[in-house]
Length: 403
Ligand SMILES: Cc1ncc(COP(=O)(O)O)c(C=O)c1O
Image 1: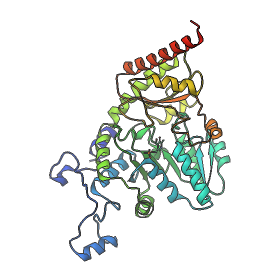
Image 2: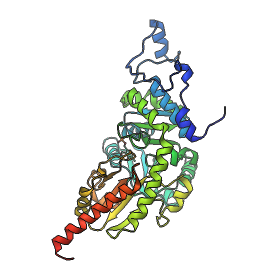
Image 3: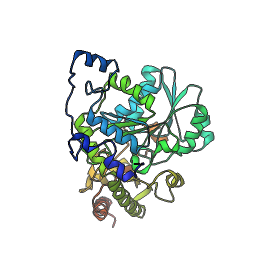
Image 4: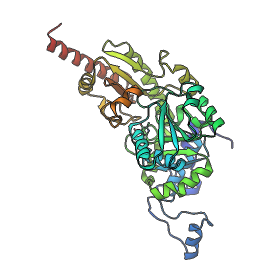
């Protein structure tokens, strides 16, 4: 049997029911350790002379099913599952760098990734720089003789700017530098960086891959040889492995990923267009908008423009906070990719750890809000936004006394 389509692989890859007494759902191996038949067998497993499980920090059947499925759908050789997206980010960055190295990073990353880069700089003298990576020349100019990793988020959290992955991968290949992509915002359904020439993909699986807001987890996919080494060194010894139950929930979440993503994207397109026409909104930043500066890149490398919208409300932090305080259906929360529509204020929440000056360079303004569009009827999400805009407008009219 040849390769199946994405929508089939998310349901079947990595699991054969006939190997598990016909159980349709993958079994949950909720165990910390595995028994050996004999002392000699234990010794052979530790020596790597015999296949088999040893201890769940080193591998677990349910986790292995998830990893196999993930490698197939991200079109890579080997995946590893972690306790969080940040455990995946840190394992890959720690594995690929040493003291004195340099990481070239997209102009804007998730706040804790920014925090990790700071920590690596302060404690281990692993430096980094940020670049918009808009052209080949810009990428080449930002690479130093010490650059060992190019690290990209696209779309960037929360500015929604994009990086041309094929172009950067091409430059990086010439220089022999691996490209790591945080693909959280797109999910494997909308974008496959490895197919575009990048080397590693990371996901906060907490988001679209889980899809139900009940798991914290991470996944990384890359070349078999390096990932196997990471599994037996960085991952095993630092220890940020996923629990079998969370892996089981992700296997379940993945089955509906394409269906959910289609709905997230459909809702987001309608809401971006509603917000664009709203008089209280200064700017809408959505990759599906032909006026978005990276619209052409979105068309080229993403299947659809995604389910996230950032928008700048007229005013500043006070106005942004007053607006989200009025929302009822939409919840104020800092995750994304869930069934529920969520909104957050990046400057004081996800990116509060980024100093103001660096935040401004990234394009995160005090009046920016990030909307993770959920799976509800889009008209209900729109009505909630409209109600909040209207309440704020009425209150400010009363305060100023104007009509
Ligand atoms: C783009 C991106 N990468 C990584 C992470 C970290 O993932 P986790 O919270 O699962 O550790 C997040 C979390 O919000 C994120 O948005």
